[in-house]
Length: 376
Image (cartoon, rainbow, N blue to C red; front, side, top):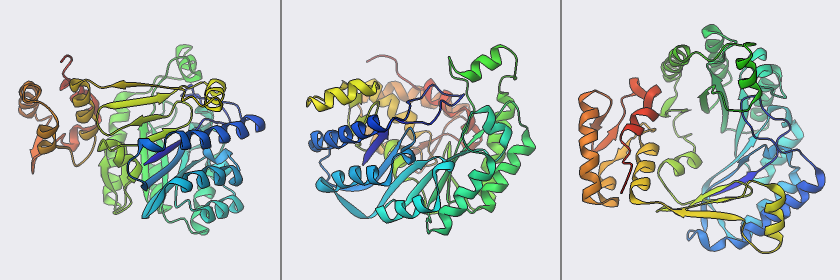
């Protein structure tokens, strides 16, 4: 698959540090650089028929349809699209006019990931979002009206200024809107952000982990009752609407990330990532140089990643694949930790897949981390 990282945001969100100003000249230079990088990295994907193409990163919906088309056409020079390719565009609700949506559909975009975050205005103000709850709902209905049948939205739970009843209303609104896919994340406090500053000055309380836990399990039960499958810790889908893009990550399939700060993986042990600085990225690409670094994972690092990604999913870790990918010595060491976790009811084995029971999913990252092997 190919992931196109578009490093533009309209504003800096209060819960993250990511922000690049939108400048018309810079946009044109960036699109040209993205096209060049696609050409420079043709040999990294042996499979030339794409199953997934994802426009993400900052806010791709800030690009014009013509700029998106330039990138699209560059990819199609070298790759063919599978019959059932998933082509996703991340978008802000306030960018999605009827005209733009029709243009996106005409271009070939068949899946939208809309950064809704919440249908509660006070939450959106806290996160410094440019849209309000009405715009969030309107954008989804507009997308449906013009024919988009695969829509995902992001939701944030555990806000320190809302309560459980508001979260219930958020979920009910999502179900009422007949969304196909939901990615939901607990609000976290990143360093050097406005949100951290407000909490340190006691303008707002810290997120309550106990409430986040309660909201997580309510969400899981509620969405299952309404026809969703909880197929990964943070992801819910109607049947047959799993994200192909996300699944590729979790199954350690190869992918190429194009653009500043984009990451790539060869499907084995080599990871690479582009520099995050826009100006340096553009300059080096224009000089025919790839502004990237890479690393070859050790066997233990590869194992730890394999466990972390697999244990986040409802399918779990394929034990047959685990034994085929890693040495007997490392498997023997891991087996001891697995047996301990099984005794504590933190892991189960079903049909030769190692899984975390869903009642323990809120703590999944910690359970997986306990299995990590720290040295070769």
